[in-house]
Length: 235
Image (cartoon, rainbow, N blue to C red):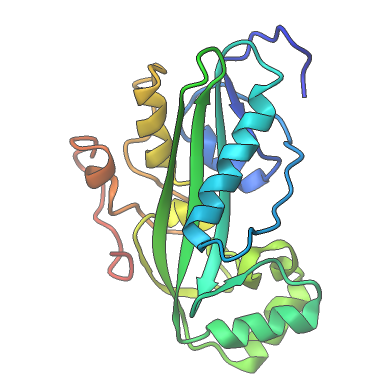
């Protein structure tokens, strides 16, 4: 992280390359800081409250080094039948997660926080997406695990993997499933008074083929004329 006095006006409190890619969609220059925050859940803490708390702590950890500017932070979890699925510790755990997920719908929750370092004003919310994993075979699961892709992913899958294509349906924000609900972040930065460039995307166009179907709900009137409608499997 840069020293105090930086001229940057926007910071991303995450070293995740996927969040870096998603925040870049807003066409705003930003720098990255990596907060040192324990992600241990509190006793009896509901999943949605946990991700909001952790995103807020991450934002605060980065903001304490700044005199001005805005910080964006997020924390994402996968919840299946009330159980939080983190990153698999090994190939065997990755296989167990994928077999438990296949053919079922689960929740992806992202707590997201935007914080004004100068004033301390903080906006924290949670974005929920529902994802159904297709009925994949054991052979497909084994091949995917052998690729190495699942081992650093929550719940052992990357929805954007075009070869494996794990999701048969995404309801809600598809960018949220990757770890950063872009239109929610844009909305909250706007509430902080951050000027968003006119070139920013009004609808998430992520490379794996999903289009956001909720941008009108989050940012009314933001849809661009002429964009293709979402694919049938994205609601």
